[in-house]
Image (tube, rainbow, N blue to C red; front, side, top):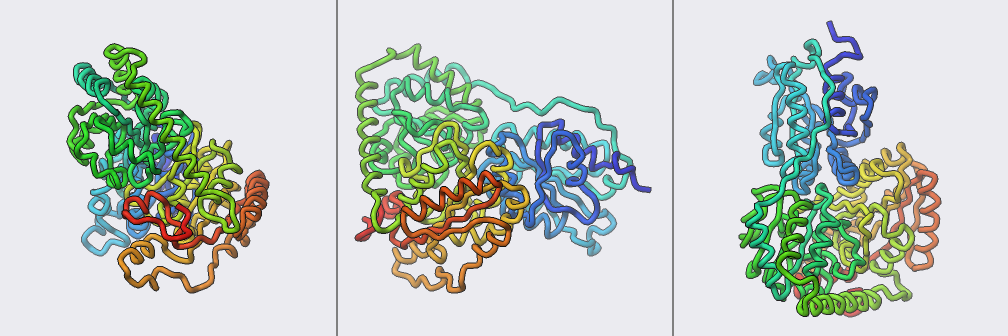
Amino acid sequence: MSAPPDHHPWHVVAGTLADAGCDIVVGLPSDEPGLMDAARTTPGLRVLGVRDQRAGACAAIGHAAVSGRPAVLAVNSGPSFANALTGLLEASSLGAPVVVVTTRVPALGIGRGGFQHTDQAAMAWPLTKWDFLVEDPRQLTWALRRAVHLAVNGGPGVVLVEIADEVLRAPAPERRPAQPVRRLRFAADAEEVRRAARLLTEARLPVVVAGGGCKPAGAGPAVRRLAELLAAPLFTTAAGRGLVDEEHPLACGLVGLYTTPPADRLLAEADVVLAIGSRLEETARMGWDGLKDKTLVHVDVDPAVFHTASEPEVALLGDAALVAGQLADAVVAQAPAVSAAGAARGAEVAAVRAQMRARHRRTAADGPELTVATALRLLQESVTRAATLVQENGLHDMWGYHHPVVSVGDGARVVTPGEQTMVGFGLPAAVGAALADRSRRTVLVCGDGAFEMGLAALPTAAELNLGLTVLVLDNRGYGWPRFVRAEEGAPDTLTRFTAPAHTDAAVRALGGLTARCTTAGELTAALDDAAKAHAEGRTTVITVPVRDDDVPVGVRRVFDAGPPTGAAA
C-alpha cells in the first residue's frame, strides 16, 4: 500500500533539501509523482520544469551562480541521468553547487536486464565530489544534508544521491526540521600570511588575480582593499568577473586569453602574482607564458588546487574573504600606507587603462558596418552595467570577455561556462539566472550555433515570462573551428550552415520578438523594443551578422597573428 500523498518519502526529500538551504528543484516530471511534485507543495522550494535534462543542469548552474544557493537537479536512472551529464561536466568545471537526486531501479532487476538500469555512480564519478546510494530509509535525511554540506563547502561542486526504489516504496522516515547547512569559513595560518605579505610588499610589480572562488565568500570588498593597499593591477578570471567594478582605477579586465592589450604587459612584467579563488586553469594562463617564472602566492579553500597549474611559493588555505582580509592587515603592518613604488604602479596602471580605452574607442567607432564591439557597446548601454550577463564561449562572443568592450559593475551578475565550454550552455543558464533574480535584466550573448543547440530552453523562458534579451552573433556556422582551420589552411566547409535558420520562427511562435540588425541604428531600435518586451515578460532575440575576421583581440594575441585588413581588433 502506498504512502499518503502528503507523507511520501519524496516529501521527506523535498523538506530536507529546503531545510538544508536549497531553494529550487530543476528537472523533468517522472512517470510517477516524484521529487518535483513534492517540491511544488514544500514551502521554500520552487520548481523549474525544463524540456531537456542537459538544459536542466545548465539552468541549475545559472540559478546557483545568481542566487548563491545550492540548486537541485532531479533526474531518474537511465537516459534521463545520462542526458544530464554534459551539463554536470560544466557544473563540475565551474565548481557550481549542484545536488543531483536520482533514483535506482529495483534491486531484483540489477544484472537481469532491469529497465533503464545504469551504473550512475560510475558514470558520474569523475564529476562528483561525493556520491551515495540510499538503500535504507534511515539514511535518507543524513545523506541529503551531507550532500548539501559537501556541495557548498571546500571547493563547491556536484554531489550525487541515488535513492533505491525500495526506499521510495517503504514508509517515509521521520523528518525533523533542521537549520540550513552553513558554509564553513576559516582563516589561513598566521605565519604563512605574514610571509606572503612580505613577498607582496617587497615586490616590484605585484599582480592580483581573483577567480570564481571569491564569489561564494563575498570576497569582493576584501580583494579590492588588498589591491588598493598594494597599488597592484587587479585582474579576474572569467568566472570571477563581477567581483569588482571594472571601472575601479586598478581594474585591468580579465586574465589570460581574455586580456586586452596593453594590460598583458603588466602580467608579463609582474614579479609576484597573488591568485585568490582560482585554479589558474588553462584559459587563465593562455598568452601568459611567463607565469611559471613568477613568484606565486596562492589562496584557495581547497588544498587540491595548489600545485596544479603552478607550484606556489606560499599556499594559503582558507576562505577567500578572510584570507584577503588577513593579507591586507599584514600589508598594513609591514608597509607604509603610500610608497613611491606604489604611486608609480598606480600611475602605470592608469596609463594602461587609458590605452585600453583609447584602443576600444577605435575598435567600436561607429561606421557603416556593425562590428561585434559596437554591438556589445550598444547592448550594454541599453541594459546597464548592473545587468545579469550570461555568455557562451564562441569565437565572436568572446569579444564580450574583453574589458572595456564590456565593462561590468560590482553589482552585476556574470555567468559563464567553465573550462569545458560546452556549446549550448548559455540559453538554459540564462533561464536559471533570470528566475533567481527577476529584479534585473538578464542578457545572453552567444553565437548562432550555440543558440540553436540550447533552443530546448526557449519554451521554459516563455512559460515563466522571464523577458530574456539574447544577442546572437551570426556567422552561419561554428566560428572557432572555422578560425582554427583558417589558421592551419584547412578546409572549413563543415563549419558552415547551409540550411535556413529556424530559430526566429521558434521565438515568434512562443510570443517573442526577433530582429536582424546590420546597422547601429537598427540595433538601437531593436534594443528599445527589447526593453519593452522585457517589461512584458517576452523574450527578444536580436541577430547581428558578423564577419569571419571580426576576431577578439585576445584570440589574435594568443595565436600570435596580426588582424587581417579591415578586422575589428
